[in-house]
Length: 333
Image (tube, rainbow, N blue to C red):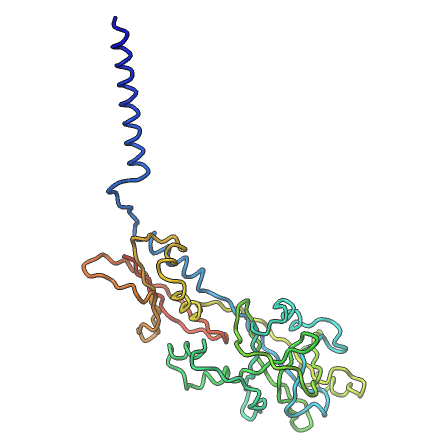
């Protein structure tokens, strides 16, 4: 037998095997001429999951009821929300919130709430005016309620003061009616993100100490009068307040939605692991069926192409704790 012929046959077989392996690897890893297939559900899920994850936020609303305990504490005053009654020594719920926010007032807002006709608002100079591009104004434009009665409560945002002790101080109107102390209502909201774009004022003037009521009895009008009768010149707490039940609300932030444009469409697709060869669009539709916001601005749906859509019932949540029902429309192609 010719050994040289056998060797050449083996070499040829090895070379052919290596060639076939190489060609196979090219098709496996580079896939020439092959276009990736993405089913409609996968594309819609990518956009929905990432948009809800990155655009949703949570706000906590807490009602506060404040009443004077001393006749000297009436009228337009500034109060510091300190510890618990009667000495103000134990940390109050508000102080614990402040510690959690590291005394950052940009993550807290407080509003005056008119409970009944005849209630007196705090000094108008203490009311924070918001610009036309605030989150509240944008939401009101979506629902068409810029001048409606339901917006009045949130127009009474108060200018807060950060005291040297790291507490919140706010302007209030402390009322007495027919020789009886009268409760007024305020609303504190807080979040892990920025709510309040106003700079805190410096501490100034005479600030009264307000202590949280944590007793087992409800802070009824009768209980308030009982506390009033116990106040003397040595009393630390000239004002009492009670913290109501907190309410946590979630929704989509318009500010976050509009901020998507700052990152760029191509970069966002990469970050969301959305295929570069595909496109999407998100519309926010108000209850009248009108598109009020959409992203991205540059994504135009071509003609004669299959477009897959999904509608999601949701809420826009503004930076003052107001929710407005909307429909979030997602399209991919």
